[in-house]
Image (tube, rainbow, N blue to C red; front, side, top):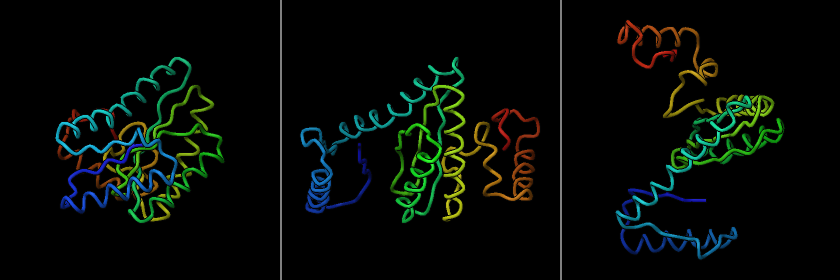
Length: 193
């Protein structure tokens, strides 16, 4: 697990208090103390970013390795109000268990209630179970005031979930706006918006 805090304006004494608190939490949850690192310099933060971005890159490669078998990576980037993140993750875990979907790699922007969950479907059956779990999760996310997508938007693979949060009229308005800005459809071809 990696906790990544950036641009938190703290004094040196506040930083020590925060780091001590994280260390106590890590110990409480059985972390391997020799694996705990605090990245504080600019060079350290560059290394942490490389590690953080290695996760989706590795998931993309793994998902691609199952394409010939009818599988792939399935990614989500739903968001909920920050204070409901724990509840949303619990609801997601329940949906994953219910549909016997493989466990996702969950990472991302916990600080704003916006995790990414990446699943690997090794075959069409796993893909179906994952999609059922994601669909149930997204319905739950909407019910607690969230959105089915945050920074990555809805384009091709997740387009069928747009109607969970937007009415047909809202979708028509978005399509009209896109058409006015891109009348020939050359920006993001194949995306609905």
